[in-house]
Length: 261
Image (tube, rainbow, N blue to C red; front, side, top):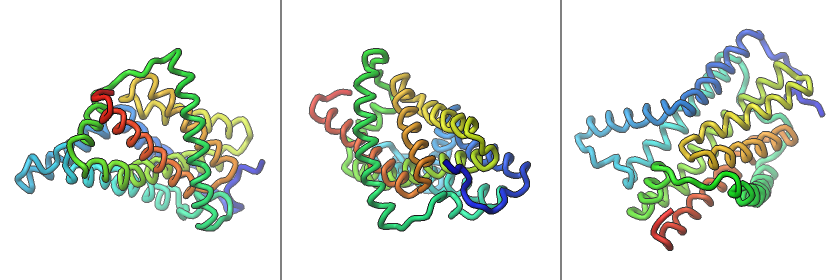
């Protein structure tokens, strides 16, 4: 299969590698190390101080979810766009490696969501024999916030799922893979990039425990394979947003019914 995005030149090789480091490299480092969460907490503290209300950005408030969504979608997403455009010198449209239409992308996104949901659920149940699910403070706090406030449910399954998760994370994944495949187009390097993207994505979810890391790595592998095969970014963003929203609702309903996670 042809792994080049288009026939236009990749530009200066050094700038392309620098773009990979400053773009996906920095974002993944911040997420894996936990510095992203620290930066987000610091931003919330500054905003609370500016408006003189510490309660405005508590976990169960709309302010928390709005600010967090903007932090990841606009902050990290904007950074990725800037690096891809200014350092790599590429238009954002280049991330769509195959031609397509919005209608076809939306249909493909719905189909991809169903496939990913089924495969990840099957993989999840299989892995439980080896890696039992371990509850984490982050997951418990998120589900507790959903129980305390309807706003948390709306924000988590709406803007946060589709913008912070679907938009930003798939933009980062496509940036990494598209640039890596353009720089190193041989088949071995293409498959290596897919594996690296999956592992790194799993490590970004260390807060979910070992089972969460493995399951999200499998999810990342499916998304990377879709991008390799079909080369369209919008279906990945839509499917990712729907998947995150579905898992959030599943966790909320479980906690609501049984009082624990």
